[in-house]
Image (tube, rainbow, N blue to C red; front, side):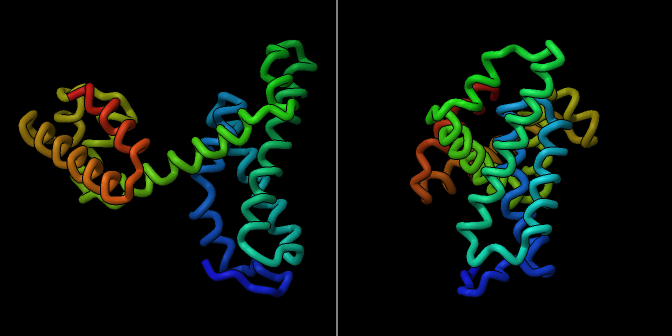
Amino acid sequence: MESSSSPEYVAAQQLPVLFKQYNRSLLFFAKSMVRSQEVAEEIVADSFIKLWQRKDSFADEDKVKAFLYIATKNACINHAQLVRSRQVHDGEAVDSLTSADPDVLARIIRAEFLQQVYDEIDRLPEKQREVFRLSYLEDLTTDEICERLQMSATAVFANRSRAAETLRKIFKDKELWLCLFLVDAMMGKL
């Protein structure tokens, strides 16, 4: 995305692009802190609303990205404190969120790393993508995948193998050795 020098970087036509670009990584980031998909989705949606409300304040993409992560982190802290005040949440999670611990940076890096992996999975051919997601993201057995997709076990195995090999090549070409490690870890399932 091209950077602009005016403080009106976030225009109406750019919001869907920014959402597509950052939504998934922000969800990973928020979920790693609040441990609930529904709460994470609500927090991220609120972060985008806050971005839109302050759209005239941003001059470039770096500022938008920083704002989204900070808004998401702060909302996660607020959520954890609210839960803690209700005596439901353990204090350790709140303490780790509010500390100046580099763990928050690690969570951001992990979220962006997972975003890259999901982006590559989305680019796979349809059947490979479906089989890969059902195998590794939904943790279905080969028989369950066969039933859901109306495929033979051989077709499931072939599509899963092709998807994994394609991802290995992509990650190797991009020198994303961590991604390759992740795919290799998932491949232990084959």
